[in-house]
Image (cartoon, rainbow, N blue to C red):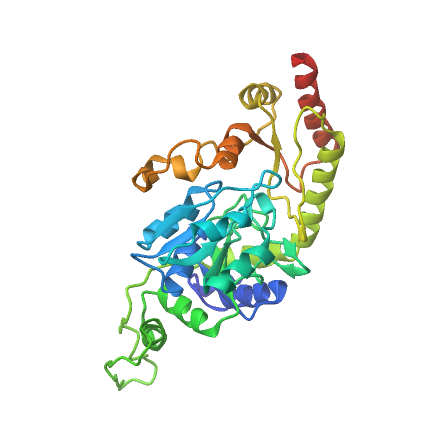
Length: 374
């Protein structure tokens, strides 16, 4: 690998190439890589000027990072319930949650199921709100023929190793069609430094700011390198991860096709004693997870584990009931669909390397459990 002897481990051509490849894949004008999916959310919120005193409407049935990022920038997460059919945000509940402090809607394409972006975008437009989509689990999803990542003001991806497009470490990306947001993202991810930091500060504050005009006596040295106009982050995708992701991106369509095949096999073969996931509306699912429902969740998980089948139980505690968010004052029972999902959902194995016999073994094991218990 030519990368290693080059010693260009941070930034450089490998990262630039991967960003360009993602722009082409998603058909978006701007893509900014970063250190993780969580950082992508924080950077996106900051780039939209969201901070203390602001509210962001989101879902409680998601990984903790979704709500955590909102709180991390000083804003308040406002949780609304989910749809029974596909676990995504119930867009019919957004309007009632809007207050004068609301600045953004943050839908999550959970498990690879696209949200109802038409309804979400319509409410956002009516109330002048920004839409920041958590697409951490949604690489390869589509909505009305557009890739998720090109369906909102700003989109956030994770390249955690278990994702459909996974690195061999951590990584993330933010995509947008807005040049100003792109400029701010580029500055925030690298300490608010350089001339781009000056530009980002002006965009965020709405007016030109006085700053030092620096001169260099050395043409090889950027005099703005150590000028910091914003409090930012050190959030960079390293070149080794970018190289791996570039290679795997070429195979993503075939990997996702295999996930679709496995999902269809599950849906056709599983007993009607479980509720299988549905694809709702105009979306194309990328099947990051295949999630069934059963009131016998714990017993089924124990049974499958004994059969050598690893299962996931995402997410056993919805965000509004997490101890870290107790200050928000939510009580059990206020978001019944999210709470029900937390009690009933089981994620069956779904990854491209599963062969046909393994998929059938999983189906037979699930069906055997219910044959023995009914």
